[in-house]
Image (tube, rainbow, N blue to C red; front, top):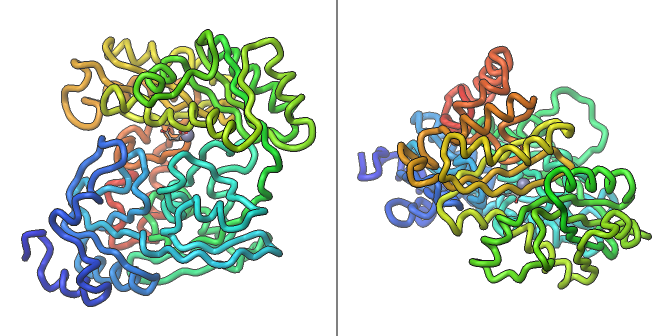
Length: 457
Ligand code: MLT
Ligand code: ZN
């Protein structure tokens, strides 16, 4: 044994695969053990940094043989504690699998290693773009985005990460490499396991590369922020935009409470004066987009951006919302969705639902109106924070998730279950479904070493 708790012989075998410089321990491993929000901190006996699929396969075979649990990690931008070693797992960092292939102009596809950032994929061809747009795109990687089925700011137009997936390369826990990367649009030759791996949160296999469909780059997009009276108004306008704005790509919601934090702490200048209770950001492209958006805004206060700089300025109000609650404390980041008809109730009532169990809590909401998705960021009040990490004793999650379940919704729209939500899964998935999940999991990972504490086994 070593100070890491791992047998010295195993550490030597890891080093023989990746080189000693890519087996990190002690202080060198610490940065891999805390998530982006600071809400989840564990400890890694070792961080392994393979450079290719063969090394991933060899490392997993060693871990399976030794019964050592592994947490795969990409850009470490996850929000549910699914990519950090909360139970002293070995971290398998895919950051060095950063090979981006040439763009296949005919198919409008590209093959990318798991460690390639989403921004690099988006920049691969000036005429093409990645359909997935998330605020963390400069750090978030292809492997992590597939493993969590990332959503983001353009799902209403292009779908989530699973919809961009045309092929996958992945390694099972016994070291078997699966590769299906031809990028066929039509391919009915058995189980669609790439789709199954999308959203599997590192529990079934380690994704090493993906074949991604690209989309035409938007021509002359127009962005508008409209001041609205509240969730009902935002939802009604977004529905109207979905019907009446042909080139709509985004319909995003945020409130004055979140904006106040950003103006106070991040130096943003308010987009509209006087302030309004809430805001709807719409973006559209194509002929007539500007007139169509103006018709949606009608006589409401609005700020319009056309050039890249002006659009980026408007987008910052929404894209920086993930940081907003962090200025007031360590936030619990709850990410929920409900059927379209229930979104207004969710967005209007959820803060009250939280305050019933923690009157001092700060609740910041924002999200993707057209997807029925709301992000509920909670900074517990002084009393609510007692009892454990992150956020306390689970009362906030209980309150929000029970409310969401009563509306027929999901406790994770886009961030995943991770460590944060595992105990609430039975609220939204039946016993029969969870038993099927467990059987799938055992067939992919009989050794039970892949992210063992994420999703119930
Ligand atoms: C977003 O929509 O901004 C992301 O899902 C990140 C977050 O919710 O914090
Ligand atoms: Zn989101």
